[in-house]
Length: 70
Image (cartoon, rainbow, N blue to C red; front, side, top):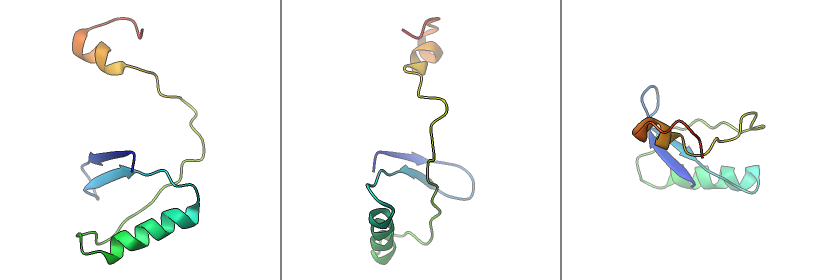
């Protein structure tokens, strides 16, 4: 798992998981559902491409009013 977010809406959490293959991801999710950790259902999305790469440090702009991304 790379990131975990508590979100509003139809689900409670959003996890960012990187797996080398679809079958390894599927195995992971099946194990999580089998374990008694409270996961009742899940939905998955596969990233096809990243049209807008991450831009760096946007929190500096928000928190400190910095006008430059650098």
